[in-house]
Length: 74
Image (cartoon, rainbow, N blue to C red; front, top):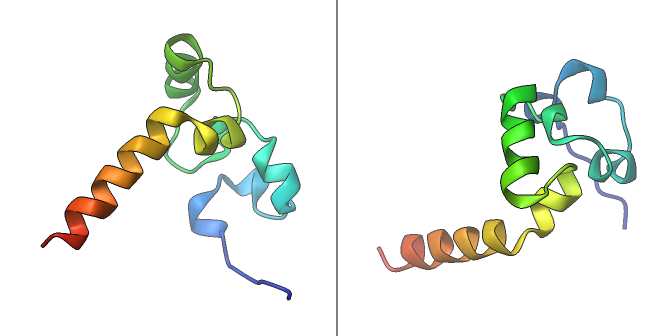
């Protein structure tokens, strides 16, 4: 099943035409609103260098799960 989504608002312009596989391997600074300084902090604090690292981070996933549970409890 093919999936289509406009990700332009989530990404820096240079990454708008990349495939999902390329985006997962892209630096976290490819995300709109994430600066090179932010990326360096993520690298030094959590060894996160790519969008895939960020999405697979146990800390990110735990935070997302807690937010989803809290939002569902409202």
